[in-house]
Length: 213
Image (tube, rainbow, N blue to C red; front, side, top):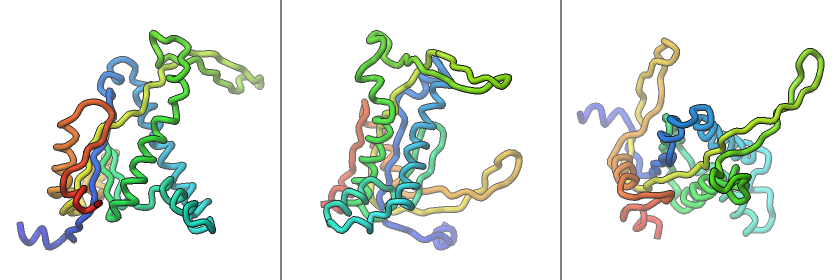
């Protein structure tokens, strides 16, 4: 065991475990709509990666604008590991990490929140009328359809402590592929915290609060 531990560098960092609320029920009700929830957070992630390249936070001359610009990015995320309806995210700068996690979670919800604020049907606020445009047989067509837009809400826990980024082997499309994984006490504690609560919220352990403050 000691030999295995020496193979990997132990890091002290923040770990957040996020679980998509209601995903199991969404899958049972409407699988396609449930999968769209996963694409919602992928969209936000890709936007933030692009923003970091196009609008680097070093550009604003005003210091407060720099802080705001950094908070909207994800450059404090050392690891972002999704699996099914769960996310593991880690970072070594707790103050910036906390700000960026908060913005990421908020932006994921805001992406479709307008539909819940002003629903077409208050008894079923997830149902949305959409328009699809395309070309068929050389002609442009418009198709009106009803879709479910489930909210992208997370519940999670944040911990601070020992973490080991380790290399594992997965099989993807029948081919062995190296992947990264995270293990350690901080990971276990973040998952444990998430299971303690109900509703869309994120709670912290004492180790993170002591380090943060």
